[in-house]
Image (cartoon, rainbow, N blue to C red):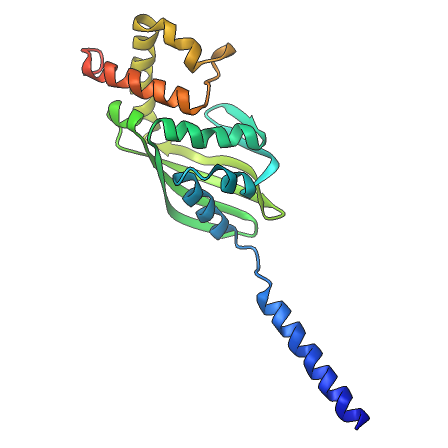
Length: 197
């Protein structure tokens, strides 16, 4: 009887261990990238914040954005420009994910650019995005640089009053829903001008 109770207890314990192991979900960095950009497109700022490390760093166009607050500003910025992102090919090696990200927004469309394709790397630490960087130049950057340069010159000559809403000291852009909206409003005017043709 004592042996029979011991066997029952051992079987129950092993069953509980199996249940606990099967319900423990292993971190999937590719799924985390998918979840982040799904939330990004739906402007679910808190979900994006929850997937970022407190001290996340994002290297973007010669600037480094540090911390959750600076990174999630881009969700609002995209909202101001009616932006949308779509994931392409993705590969993971450990906690590093390299992926293709196709970006479109109203501002770029007004500049004559259908979409940019970015080649992005996320490095996860403890299940959170720690570092974001590009792995190679974005497809379409040359078009954006050319059209963006013409647009920038036009804004400086025709709408210098808009510059404080777009740039802070040393040319670092202001990233907010409002600045995204200002860019779209100005790009509409620019695209209808002879300079934008």
